Length: 287
Ligand SMILES: C[S@@+](CC[C@H](N)C(=O)[O-])C[C@H]1O[C@@H](n2cnc3c(N)ncnc32)[C@H](O)[C@@H]1O
Image (cartoon, rainbow, N blue to C red; front, side, top):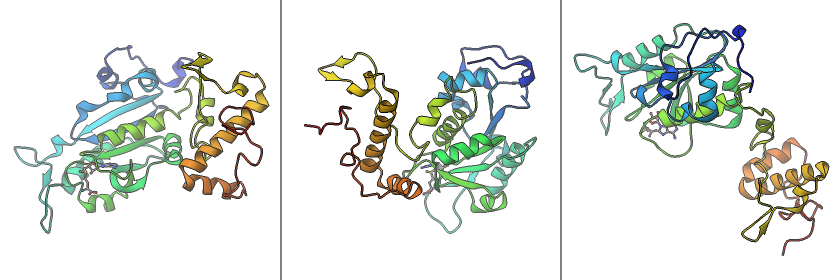
């Protein structure tokens, strides 16, 4: 991966092995994609984002991460951020005046296309198309909920988009925020060494990815499919596409139907009967 040049906007940030230092007092990099996270637990960031390729990209200024601590916006001596639900019921709700003040702080200096997102199990399920949209934006603000969530009026007032990580309930939005940022950051040019890998991986063309293999050629009596060792690029491409179609059809009928519609294909067509390869890569029926 090439290093950012001076024109990239970096002033001076020293490399650090300690992830948290990746976020402290870094100068504002004009061109860098930014994530601002409103949270009661700023200490859990960058978390996993400080590791591996996202951590390296953070260090190199390809993107920036800032947290806005919700606690200082709290009310009274104890800086209370929540209150009981109107109408009764279990749990607590994050107050709109507290969250609103944090959102105002997070809006300072935002530029261009900058979605504001509330991580919420009620939201639209997060997917690769969303990650691509967020990666193309100038930055994003993520609001992490806690307790029973945030007062509805704040979502309305700020035109916040609700995004869900899936049909399950976590205790807070921080893990969801890190997942969303990870999936978006890796699509920013130069973050991954090999940009082609994002073009071929699962969901990039509406299909799940084909199976992957590496050395040794035989492991535990199991061989790598012949075709992958043939050096015949056209056959390898055809086999991978066929496997991607088969896996998608078996595991994700919803994606398969959408793919067939887009490519004017019959969703009930049998990939193997139509002459495509099997897992062994031999074009023979599997035994
Ligand atoms: C305990 S949950 C609140 C659940 C809420 N009462 C409900 O039933 O929809 C607390 C916070 O965790 C986050 N959260 C939980 N599950 C999530 C999911 N599947 N996707 C995104 N965020 C989630 C949200 O920020 C939420 O405000």
